[in-house]
Length: 244
Image (cartoon, rainbow, N blue to C red; front, side, top):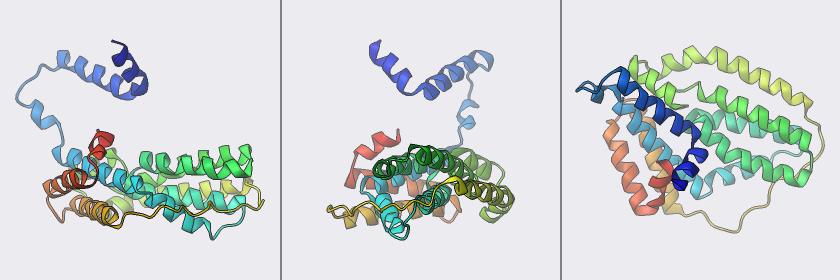
């Protein structure tokens, strides 16, 4: 019972969703049509995408990319702009949740040496807004997008054209808010001595590209599913637990 309670506290949204889903059974009794309620394509693509992103994150590819970009910045304001843009554009491909989980801790680490709590709070708030704005721009930005994209048979270009005006306007508003960040100087994080595993990077990148191809309907969804499971079994089976 204690383990169940800990799980509920750790995953309140999932627990609430489970309770509500169970309640609907009494409203709509189970029948053979229940199988059709689940969108198999969306679930497969989302699972494979999360596995690929978890793999790339585990080998530090996002940290490396961020460090390289931050070497071009020198002030708190430029740092904030860079982190916000990273969250915005990365969320287009890896979902808003993953973008924030990846880059907010890095933001905390970087700002820890600056000791500017006010700028830190504002940057994280703007990162959250940017990640949500970026994620709504593409079919793979979040699960809702994948569902709508597949449900109504939209093309990727049509989806982006619909969301582009709102996303661009929102990004402009977020960047305007960075004027409240100071121009104080800051340094990029030091380079890590650990080397990135080339084989794993290639495998996870290949799975990620297969996921994108599946979303654009260039390959069947089961291809990226097999690739994701195979990549996890070969490189790190714990990735499957992280996705679940």
